[in-house]
Each structure stands twice: as C-alpha cells, then as structure tokens.
Length: 409
Ligand code: ADP
Image 1 (tube, protein in one colour):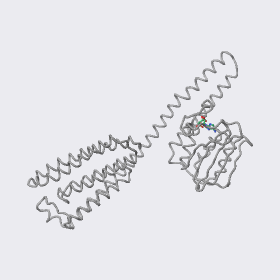
Image 2: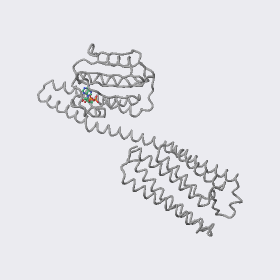
Image 3: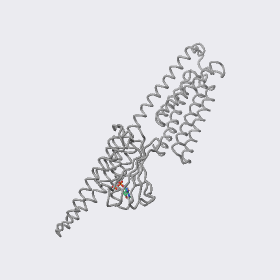
C-alpha cells in the first residue's frame, strides 16, 4: 500500500464517521421522542455536546490530512489515534444515553469494521479489545457507583440486575469479536485479491512494453537486413537476421521466466541444496574453461533453494562474459547467517547512477545492443523469493562485483 491509498482510506473514514454519527443522532432523537419524551432535554445537552465534539474532530482530521505531508507510518498512527479517540467518545456517549440501555454500542461495531478495512487485518482485534475494555470499565464504574448511572427508562433498575448486565455485556462483546473476525477475514481476502490484480496488471504492462518496445525494434532490424540482403545478395545480412531471431527467442524465454516467477512467487517448492554445486553447474553451461574460477571457503554451503536459483548465477555469469573479455572470479564466503556469493569481473564496470536501476526490468546500461534488460530483474526477483539480497559493487581493480547474499539453511 502506498501513502496515496492510505490517504484515500483516511478520507473514507472521515466521511463514514460523519454519516454514521448523523444517522445515529437522528435515530437517537426519534427514539427518545417516541419512547421517553420527558427525558429529551436531559439527554439533549450531553449527547449533542459529544456529537459536536466528534464532528469538530472529524473536520479537524480532514484539515490535518490536507495540510500535512504523510508517511505510511504517520498515517497508520493517525488512524489509530482517530479510532482510539472515537472509542473514548463512544463510551462517553453510551454513558450519557443510559449506559447498558444505550444502543450507541453499535458504534464500536462500526469502528472495529473500519479498522479491518483501513489498517492491517489483525488491527480489528486490537480495536475490538480496546472497545471491550472501555465498555467494560464504563459498565463496572456505573455498577459500583464510581460514576452515576443515567436512568432513561423507569423500569431500568428493576430489569438491569448484575446477572443481566453481565450476560448482555458478554453477548455484545461477543458481537464485537464476531465483527472483528469477519472484518479481518474480508480484509485479508481483499488484500490478496488486490495483490493478484496488481501482479496481473504488472505482467500485462510488461508484455505490452515488450511488444511495443523490443520486439518491434528487432522486427524492423530483421526487415532492414532482409531488404539489403535481397538487393545486394550479401550473406552477412543473413547472419545478422539469425542473430536477431536468436535474441528475440532469448527475450521471450526471459519474459516467460520473469512472469512465471512473479505469478508463482508464493507457491515455489524449496529444498535444501548445495550452493557450490549449483554455481559449478551454472559455470559449466558456458564452457569457458579456465576463464571462470570458483573460490569457495566451504564446499558444503547449503541453502533453501527453489528450482530457479541457478538462473541467478546463470544471468550474472552471462553478463560477466558479455560485458568483460577478461577473467571472471566467483567467491563463495561464509557471512555469519548468510552465504555471500560474489561474481567479479574486470570489464568496464557500472557507473554509480546505474547501480540500482539495472535491477529493474528493461533497464540497460550503455551497452544497449547486447542485452534485453531482463536478466538482472529476473535475478533480483529470484533472490527476493529466497529472502536474500543482490547488489553490485565496484571492483577496485576495474570492473564490477555482483554480490548475492542468501540465508543459510
Ligand atoms: P541485459 O540483458 O541488458 O544484460 P541485464 O538486466 O542482465 O540485462 O543487465 C542490465 C544492464 O546492466 C546491462 O544492460 C548492462 O549495461 C549492465 N550490466 C550488467 N552486468 C554487467 C557487468 N558485469 N558489467 C557491466 N555492465 C553490466
């Protein structure tokens, strides 16, 4: 969730609070006029005073929301403060409108539901517990005469014996936790659906940009070479066509892998595997002989690995070969709770301003022609899947060092 989304939710809370309070106040007035008109004036003053406080605070919240520049943490605290204050005012409203008699306890239900929609799912239980405590303390204080009970109906002292108060309290508190449970459930389902939607939107964007960006360029290149080859009959252009078709194939393979990892991020099968073996196999694929050397502190370095982990090293070695003509060294080091793997090359290195963005999809450095800009994005996704980190440093002797840190099993 970003700040914009949470800001929208706070706006929703402010609006919803306004409507809920207005509707309940009108219902309260009607109920009093019909059932206990003689209490109307006695009730009017404190209740309208509290309603005014809620509405003024509500207005204040919207002003603060507009004026202030918020962080996610700040907004979350802001929502908690609002809900806690709402609970306090609701408890006061309940007290002035008859304590256990009052039907204003339904506002607690609204607050618990709102917490589930606005904050993290578990917050519904926090707000339900705060409401229970506050409601319970009020009823206890009234019962033991710490604060006076406001009697609305004449039969009130006869009906509201301790046992009845307790069972009513338990019943109502039960409803708080039922609402908390459902609100928690709904917000979890919504969160999951939103994540799925975001992921599928990102993938759609990815495919569209590939179609409009890379494949179109490559097709134009093929067309140009085909035309020249037709006119000049030079075979060199056929070679270029084959090369470009291979690149298109490689790009599509990478896209498929990227979308597979993004889609199945949470369903991958992990098993304990030796990093040394995985890296050795990835090196062997390239058949570069002595050019690539592995230096391992320990040849038994186990990690919890998905079947995609070799792709990380495959991509890093592939880049080192592509962007440097000299030797390549791979170090496997014991780094307390992690294994640190560094792929060191002696090429021209990566400028500081590109060190982070090359890990985003389609971001390429100066050597644009050589790649597709997806290799490091794929590597980053896979490393995240393994709860690890990936970054690039300068090789002090010239070139770059790509480092991956993976938790030990
Ligand atoms: P590509 O398919 O373009 O290589 P990558 O995502 O693998 O896509 O890499 C992104 C960019 O990072 C490359 O275009 C290149 O500019 C830069 N890069 C990656 N590895 C190296 C390296 N070992 N040395 C220099 N530049 C590199």
